Amino acid sequence: MWWVFVAALLFGGALIAMSLFGSDGDGLGGHDANAHHDVGDAGLFAVFSLRNLTWASFAFGGIGLLAVLTHRSPATTWITASLAGVGTLVGVHMLFRALQTSEASSAPLDALAVGTTAALVLPFNDDGFGLISFRANGQLHEMPARRADEVADMPSEYFAECRIGWIENGVAVVQPTAN
Image (cartoon, rainbow, N blue to C red; front, side, top):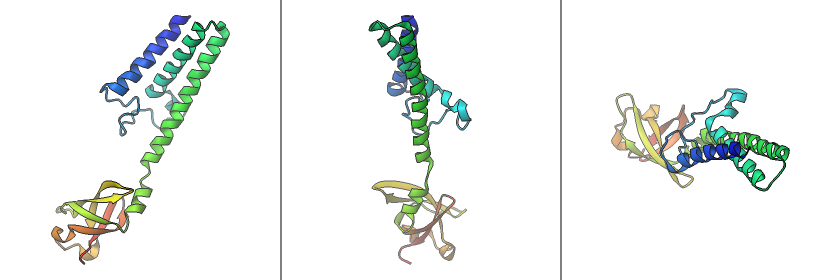
């Protein structure tokens, strides 16, 4: 019976170690903030992503092996190991879902950006879009930008320093501060 727990512990531990210390690129440990290679919004099946199963396997194997080494009864061993695995599976899923939800919401950044002073990083192209940078919450952010309608004909040089008037579909509408 102990070999099942050792195999689960080694499987989960190896995948966790690879995700934390290696460059496997699949974001198992959440190391790559932009990697969301899970099942997504597939309802109940989203719980069974590789990341969640990896952590559940590690918990199942670790608790099971600990119970075997401390001479617990087989029933107690299987029940506690299974509960640890299922609890970890659901807990990790809920944790990463909460992190993903808070990461995806840009409304707070938009609210902080309106009215701030920004610097034009890339001049406006023929389509009227450029790139600005600004500080919000002590961090430097970049955002695509376009000129406000009333100053649409002004050259990019006048927008070296500009003010964000509002944000429209993820694009900042800016006016020069010297105007």
